[in-house]
Length: 235
Image (cartoon, rainbow, N blue to C red; front, side, top):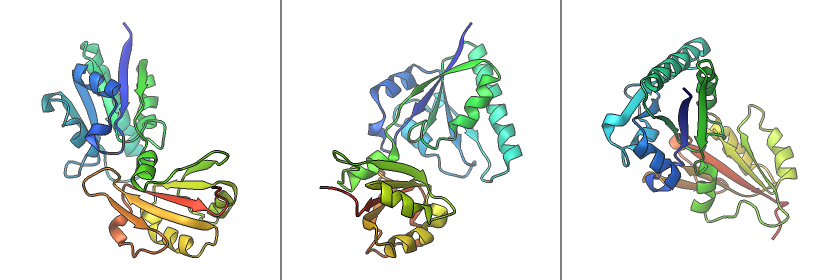
């Protein structure tokens, strides 16, 4: 018997931005596995699916809020074992995560553990947060003859100079830990024509900041995306 799980990207946060395909699979699922950072923490994925499926279907699995690789590895393996048990009982199982599964998603760690149990995965795309963010600031990421890149904020911000010199638009994700450094970089870099920080895009608590002119609070970095438009942008 084939063992199969659906991995679903839920999009940036607005419950109405999940796809019809994702919605249909969620409704058909017997178990919807939802990650959460800890028992007291907020699970955005859980909030999204709670608008669409019964709470009795939701299986919340907690992950520690640290970078202990051994502990995280143990937790991912344990979750894979639990999913295998659900599937062995003949249940239809889906796993949900915000954004899209192909873009900086932690699902890839779980997927490796699922392979140990010969569990196949069907991935359902979600609206990427940076696509939603670009629409929220009413800017085109790229137009004809331009290019853009998506990067994680690295420890070496000087690398952004090369990116801004070669791409019309640079999308920067995972900015919260080095937000102040990014702000200083943007304000002192002549290559940046426009820059925005979009926090919690599409959610009720969404905030949008101009990186060149706004005073940005220290708490603005979590679940944020920065979009920089360089001087090489055409049009």
